[in-house]
Length: 259
Length: 259
DNA sequence: CGTGCTCTACTACCATACCAGAATACGAGA
DNA sequence: TCTCGTATTCTGGTATGGTAGTAGAGCACG
Image 1 (tube, rainbow over the protein chains, first blue to last red):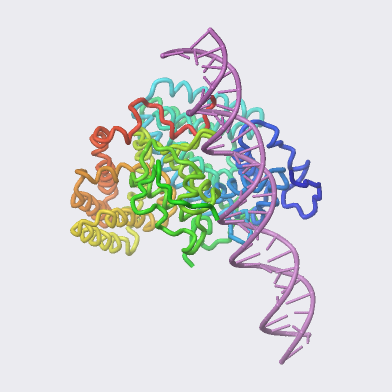
Image 2: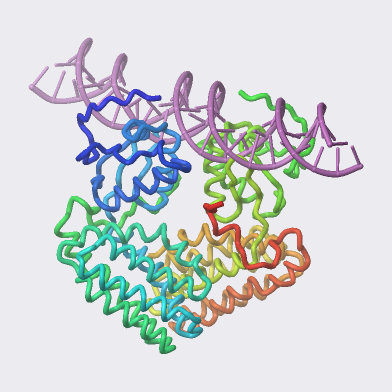
């Protein structure tokens, strides 16, 4: 076991109530996936600030695990465009790249439009009911000011569409990409699109699907996905330190440069 | 250094001319990505047979590296749906799942259609020229019976479309997914779609893009992507041992089963 | 006082060691 | 001969040691 003295000096993590509160070794299952989810959530929520540098050993000490699972988590987070691993130099939490966010939306929109068109064309049995249930739950969450709960239900809504046509893989493939957009969403809680408006858009999508209106469903989905990022320019201005400077170069894309 | 005796007994790898011919330690750069590419190619080409079991230690010995880079490669190959890592039981090369291939095509088609539509709508400068060059090179490769070379040029063609509209990320995101389809393509060299026909389709796509015919470009792209898998049912029948049995259950999707 | 060099303190990467669980080989008993 | 319990030997997961390489601080020199 590693020496795990408190020594909270120079901690990049919020360390508000002791970061290692979530026990990884105690609970069941492999710790590598647990650590991955934990770190991703930490970054997406903005608790681990963009630009701050982390290290395998640092995180390993902090959570009382070895460097091995940390390394695996780092690699996946790099693929998701949240970290940049620079060999022998350090690993840095990437600032949000506006370009990367739009790239993610482009791919997500392409896939989700195809999904929702197929839904409207096939009108699979039970889907309309499922969507209605989710929308009802979303209204409840919105009423109770339960923002995190709403985000989970929002995900469930989109997943339900893919599952409806037997293409749950389509949503799985988007999950890695979605992280980029999620970071913006968490920043945009302050004065972004009100939840009732998002619910209204969900209802429009579900309605078009139930009616078998293919083109209408596509239009509704596109509007919805663009709405999510409508506040992006304003957010980027409000939090300049969270975002990559303007230039088009995106370090996240280049996984292996030929020097 | 690990004892690396020849002992070719019970080798799952073809071992035709000594598998470790490709030196990993000598050449430059981190060996983990190199090993990943090498293993992926080995699986996609069918040199490592579906259903065969591999182990971290086995591969590590074979290529004269430690288990660490092998492990990282395994993880990524699992995400790509090529391997199934079963803790404490073994890692198996997954058979091709027809469902998974169609899932991959669904996502790829959705993204590539969006790309090609944007290309036709924007008609970015220089793209038409680039596509024409690639098609010319493809004709040369097809004439010289250079199948692997043609596949590389085919990839370059699709990547060029994404790059044309400044969405190279779209192609990057597809690379992991594409592996499923590539496996089929390598099996289908025997009596599949003749290369001239594929080139004709490329020309149709490029022509529609150059003409700014958005819908026509979409149609051409869809036809092209479906053509690639046109021989799938026949291939699956011809190589039953390479494919997952009929039932809809796809082991590739379930990353963590709850036993 | 300004500038170049060395040397230290990190980093990620790779290799090795240890562990718990799963599958199988095997032998005793019926 | 067949069945069941046990021991061995695999597996992947985790922990830890070692190495090449980079960034930056401190010192020598102009």
